[in-house]
Image 1 (cartoon, rainbow, N blue to C red):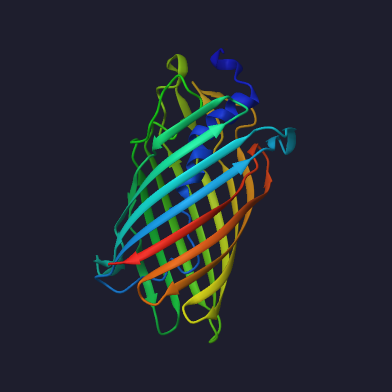
Image 2: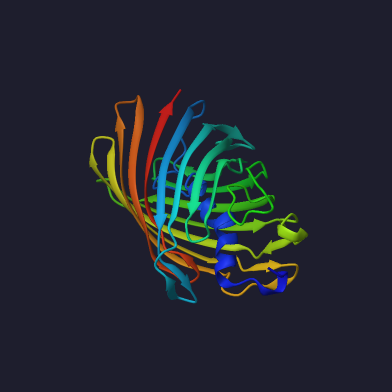
Length: 293
């Protein structure tokens, strides 16, 4: 296929490699309610995510052009966090390692292996436990460590460096355990210069906003909901804009989080795309287990 004639479906496959597979391990980057409340200095956390995402409706410019996309993404993500103090602020340097298996039936392609590892840390200029108010800034760097083959449209690695800047605000609203979280982020992509036929794939910045409410219902347990909006990310191949490659997605997630004593925290969630302008509508479940050590 000539580089100036990528069809919408082919671009969707490229996005599956650089976005939909990213959905599998970006769940570790996606903020959950109360994640912007720092743990005490010296605490270490091992956080494991088990995720399964699927989708069949493939949309172009908001219209469904196929009901048989047959996307299936399964992932295991391991995250290690150390809470400390840096530059006079609470901080949590961390590393996230995803292992992903994805199958896009409509493309007849499958890819599995280690995804792009990413590292980062939140820094809290505001951490007021008495007023139940926290504000943090989190830079992440994605490393091009994931499995990648230039002759495949679907890969678990993106073959490029990426940078995410995230900011989160958490506020306790009532004395009976109602919390609000507001999070915004921008993702800045490097180029993938090893596309098929030696082409270079570039991508515009992606922007995401999330709003969350959580309510205590048991000792150490709370129910929560998250609405997320993601826009941007238009794709270019060798400087040529690709049709139907920009993202405009609304997503709703409902979950429950429970501490089991002080030994570990268990979280389950269900997530569903409410609307997808370009790409595959997905829904899925994630189990998260956090163990302090």
